[in-house]
Length: 227
Length: 227
Image 1 (cartoon, rainbow over the protein chains, first blue to last red):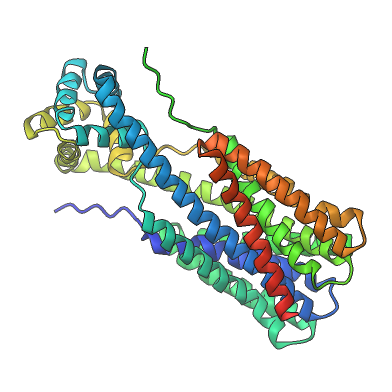
Image 2 (spheres, each protein chain N blue to C red):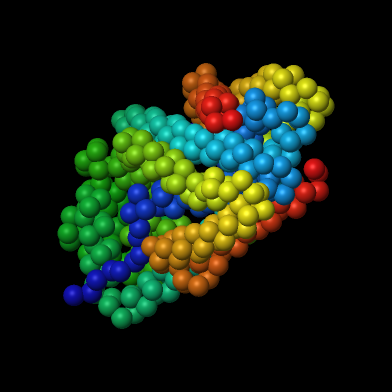
């Protein structure tokens, strides 16, 4: 038996990756940038925590509201398609036929298939939603879960670069340790991300680490320049 | 002539929305948070600019690398599908038939349609990519353009809340003006976003403004609490 082994990762893993990628990068870059110009690690912590709170809410709530909008958009289009197969069935049938012809099916057969699909209004609308509009039915609960998962992953990721500043009052030490553990965390995260998304491990890992390091370097240099 | 008027926004508009939504929210929240605890507006500016640099790179470069990965993933799956229609054509034909049967087409007709599609290997693989795997051909140049657009929109959005701190040395004044112009900007942005994405205008506008205000309030309260 032939088995399809295309790599897919579960939604929750995907959300953790989304939240953690930014969570490890932006608070790391911000605190690294500030460590070069602020006197006490206390202010770095305040900035880092503020950023994490803002980032969590922006990504989490923003994602949740976007998910809600997607549900509303889907419902509106669904209603419209039901309305259209009722009002202008011939035009809608023509659209289905054209989709089949673009797949490489000849006209006569396209008409036949279309006739069968349009027997059942639900299947017909389902077909239009999916293959004409490219819309998959969004899950309202998913938006909620997704928002929480992304926000928590951002939070977890963001606390890694912040941690060293919490245990030392020396900014310079905090900065070195923050770089060390965050780069390590980026490498570990990049490795797992590459693994679950089926990317080449070395290349995928380095991409993640490179993004974080570049962001931190830019923030550090810019903060030094303008302060 | 019946005309489909489903709302779609161009890719570039979509990217501007993605970048600006976060750009208006996170730097606003961060600078608002810090304005309550830092003595000089200078440090707020340094923090804000550092955050904007980090956010631009994380969203821009992160998005670019993700786009690249998508292209690689697509190419790998394409190669695999070409390989499969060569090695196990019967199994692949069965998969096409099953897709048609799930659309509401009967078995005999599904077999006929499948036979036609599988005449042309390119169309066949195209069908599998699209309707079995749900993958659309990604555009490599798009990833590049998209990254630049998102980063610039983040930059543009981020400078709005920062601007008042640049023109006043009084933190309190900076904070009030930053709130005023950023909330105004969030409302204007929310309005245009709702317009181009076809959402109800009032609701869509308020959602965007609410996210920004909540993020700023959270950052402000948290910064006050821990400082």
